[in-house]
Length: 91
Image (cartoon, rainbow, N blue to C red):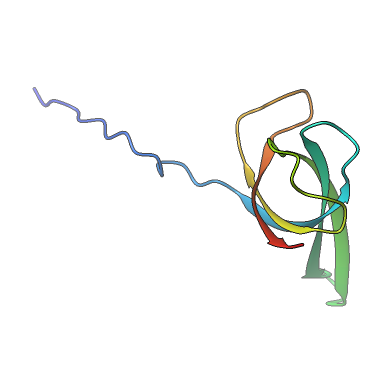
């Protein structure tokens, strides 16, 4: 018989990170962050710009529209919120 050892660590799971700009700050403790991604088209190799908006949790309501922030994936906070603001990169 072999005993299994389960190591519990905070970094056991890779958490996704994105950098984007706050575009809406009208909700309480919620910000809409727009992330722009550049990638080459699979066939034509032209650089394509893709935008996606995420609802992110901001506990202290400290970010305003236009701020550049880093968001991190987290547990579901509400119906559409699965991200939280980790840090403000530029005010």
